[in-house]
Length: 112
Length: 110
Image (cartoon, rainbow over the protein chains, first blue to last red):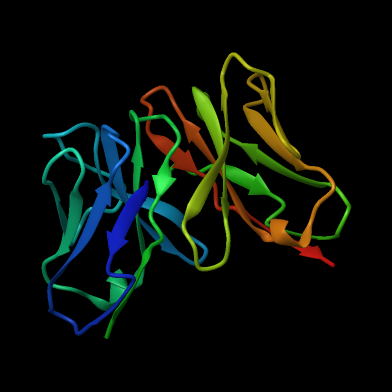
């Protein structure tokens, strides 16, 4: 039982490049989330998917897109990376929205 | 954005001592969740306390909830060096979206 798996663990991009962060959970959870964590800012929600087939914007969605590919997988795409997107990204899942979250181990992204 | 407030921001104690962290919100509380984050790792869920509960225990952890004061506290008893981490609270409000605090950094010195 792996829980929440996200890849890659580290990534360096140049400004303007694109990339997709992958996330998968094996707990049959309905809800999935993407957060970014920056020093002094705490956790900020980028996008979430309350259930398969739905996605909604969080607190800081600009510059990102998401896809809930199926119940297990929720990907985050940066279409044109900017230095302001340098951060640690976490994927998480929960049985339902409002219940406690299981987090992946994070992706450290640097945009030069 | 609405964020919870945690205090203290940082706490340094000796092994064996108790550590208390507090969390308060301006909005109503549906359930309140506490998480631990070790350096460089993802967050790990510790305890969820619902609005109709006042106290909850899990091993050396004790969480209290005061809905009239919109506050919660996390007590770690007989702390160990391995408890060194950042601790976050998150409030699932009436819309069930989590509102996160900025965290308390706990250092337990051997």
